[in-house]
Image (tube, rainbow, N blue to C red):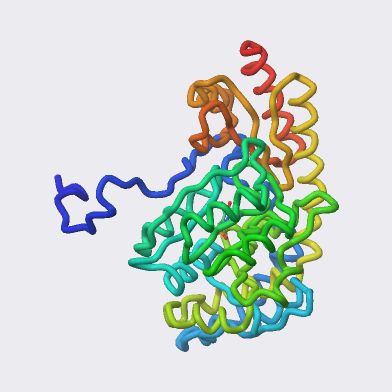
Length: 361
Ligand code: PMP
């Protein structure tokens, strides 16, 4: 049987594993930070109509620049942003890949602060960009002086900061991003995939855009919008950044069907985003109940919670799965991550946690 090793694959990809959260068919799936609520009927209908209207013209290529969709997304973001400030692709993973293609690549480097989103180093790898893995503070925050020290040490071409951070849930004050921007020579990507779940008092880095042409705010419809299957991510930045990613994007990368579906979803956002408050309630419930039981839990501004288990988190992950609850081992020794789902899913998780963790305290 032929294996990858038998192929003339790039040397730097040998021995690597693909990104792969298990996709298992179990009753309670809380492992990939999806929105547990199905798309509501009115939005299903609107997306159906929008897609139907495209079908006869599928003999033609779609709008290469996705202008109508970008216009809707700019309207959603506010902050005085226009179509020229926004770019969209098949998930924010693709947006970030395009940024690395345009601003990274062979001979260039990207710096990130772990524990953070595992795709950032993988996207760097795939684009031939050297990844520099610095660390967050022990409480999972990031002090401006610590971030600036790493930038001075490594002088990266790109800096990735995730806020609220996956997998810890930690939101950063825009002042930290501002300090990074003032010191970094390269592009600064703030991954705000979970920003809609932030607690009051946490601000988006969008507020910094008018003064910083090297800042890129990355967003997605996969989480709060409950549109993970629709694959739509986007960025907000100076129009020059949008010009730059157009140099590397594939022609017609967003299908007519994707554009129409996403547009309808953004237009009907009130209905989609109505689940955010319920999810935040379950998130806060997980934090509170686990803490009451004496479990160490990271503060969360996202739709998931990182909590401490035994040193052997793999065994605990399996114990949850044995009880029909799929959560995430993010490879952090002694910690597991659970997505806040519906009330019933959260109850199932908390019941399993009571059985599994009570023996460990
Ligand atoms: N950024 C972060 C921090 C994420 O956690 C995720 C999803 N796991 C993404 C980006 C990518 O999401 P998508 O490609 O679905 O937009």
